[in-house]
Image 1 (cartoon, one colour):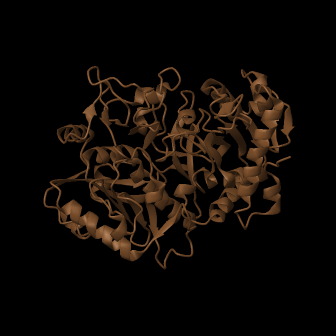
Image 2: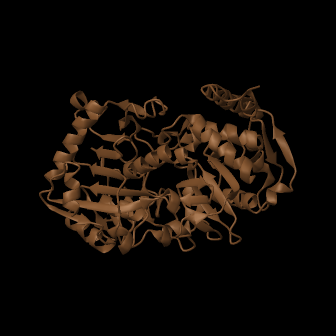
Image 3: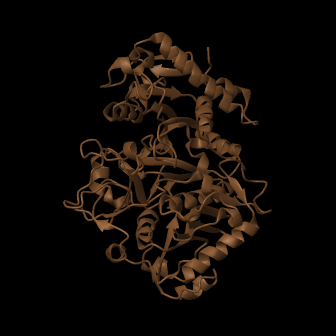
Length: 526
């Protein structure tokens, strides 16, 4: 049956095709095929070679008449012709046809039944099939029998592109064909490319249904009040949303519809660098039987991990099902958010650790999406680099910016959510001089925001960043709330802060449709 379906995609599988294998069988297969090693905790440990993070220069969207006028073309959404897509498609299907084994996973993206996308992933590697098994929403027996894929992903790390003849930038390629609802991935073993290609496709189709797709994590309190955490990789979305006192809805990808919040996924993909049981117990304990761990150094004798070892990459990762987090909402749905938190990891050390935003400021910072790209999250990044990524997820948002901005405004106005900007980056100086704001202090500030403790405190205005920052926060030293107090030189602080404010001002000018009111709500270099 599955072989016949694959023929529709020009895959004439000569070997065995495995569909929705159970976790234990996938673990066994991966070891037999020498794709990975089982750790002391029972997780599968793999290395991904040259590509240990997403490769943005190798990601393309096929430029067809159907989508041409809708896509925000540029350095992020690079076009590829249908002719080049057809060449790569022929290459990857021919490659897959000749393999001894193929691994198929049929599952879903989108916990809200009204907005669910049926997905089929065809893998060359059993370990990548385990990854997507843990990351997507898994069907029960009845759902599997009636599964009708509307998006197909072909992932073959062994299929190498030729830039001269295939129109790519390297041997690796991630190509999204929205017209055919097909994604092809080759030349890279980094499993995150599969996950993010699905996210990108959801982010194209959902706004057409009035749903805001978001690069955020979500959790809720015991009172069922929901919170969202926006931020790029490395800002703390996964860490801060995995709170033992709250119920995790999801760690990375969500939609906001008329029904409330819903998770796209059924699993988590957490960063592991410097992971400790003390600071992140839920993530630490989730790395057990059936989890997939990428590029974490493991002692070959004891089979224990060294999470502090970044010799392979800073972007060490673990994939595990949502239910591995003890207090998780496996249904993947929640109510409309009471609190929204924008996370930034400011490497210049000048942004306040917490500030409250009014709706117009929220629009500004949502569109700005400022953070510092941290080492390892993308190929070639070895030190933090200041960046602006619209909606804290521009690499995954194919439509024009105002589509997403207008949807956020619509939902903010309708459900009156409180919005905070929280800096999880540096204080007392820039990267290399200052120090990272402690996760304990950040958690206390987040808790205060979620519990409405910051609604009744006194605020003061930061002139350069045009932000209102609290003078006090429960259990947090007041000195660190005002960032200039943590620097040895006020003059040096103001110089650095003005430099960053000027970058904000330059960035917001790229949005031609933004109102003057929104522009004026952002930072102002003095």
